[in-house]
Image (cartoon, rainbow, N blue to C red):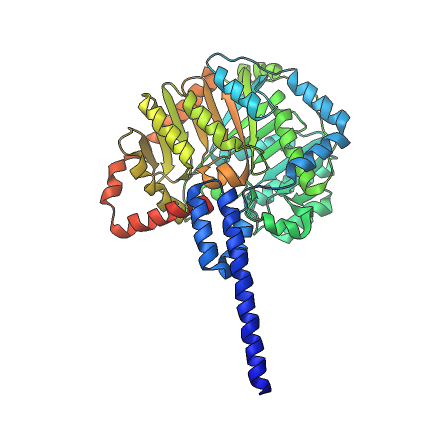
Length: 498
């Protein structure tokens, strides 16, 4: 009799547990319907939460959240606590504010509405192509540091590239230079404790993004800091697509040749990059380091380098905007701004990205641009590092049919660069991929450069890349095997929640 009563109690307990799970699933389904950005994602989450709440509930509350809470409030508190420094930095940057640029009136207005950091003048920009050139320029810049180095990367590998940078930083610390080293714990998951210990022992300030957030950081596991920033003494800044690892030199056998792009900036744009680093550092550590906020214009440096360089890779007096975006933004800044760029295009829009899983707004903007007669080209890799994203990209072919949008597949190796070219007067290099994760879930940074000189350099670079591509026929998707089309469509339907 006692055994029967115990069995009944266990059945009642299990039934109650399933009832509570189902209620939680229904509540979460309504939460998804009210808060999820797209109807496609809302339906996917809602059905899954109601049918299998036991498995989907934890996934939804970790991966379904699209807002990174607390980041902006944290930075506002930091500005109030360091009001003198914040005011000085902002005043320095605003002294070089550009209110008008020929042909970019709408973009300037969009920037003004989306964020307070504008295009600035008196900058220089140098295009850095691939790992060898970029790493040499970075290590040389670190060598020249007198006061501090700010280094932030999504992926840092404990291989000969990562060790070369670590050893260089330790050597500079021994010379009295301060080092602030920030990495993403998910992107740099395989970075060894020994690597970090050596830096800390030498005196570097080391932190992972989200380090001090305790258990709440696990609720932010779906958000990643994808930025790549290196700043030297507040005088030079590097941003772009390269992380630190030997694969970026093309030494990873499975990937082969690695195609990537970075830029070296000087002038007021460096202080803007520095403010982006400071926001991330404060969120992680709770302190703002003593930094140089005094702008040094690029004119003198440009003249000196151009005299020594017949190719004139450096161009003075560039207008540059640094746009940092992420899941803490009050508006979907990344998506809105990419749509604004596409809508701005009148003759040419070329985009190089390793991934092509954009949201519906960007797809529609691309279609509209093509209908206006804009030369729309997408440069995507034929070799892939993430197979499901590669498959998903083909599902968009059906949507693009009939719009005269050209897709070039890079065949020389893996194309990882993130580059946008608009008409003859705007070009961008940075970290934003054309996928949902970059656009909505990652912390990113892009350098937008106005003017014909840099635009021409980027155009020449992309034209050379297209010589190592084949032009994919969008209609070929219809002739793919059934399994290929089915799998790509499934991933396409899941893309808003991946």
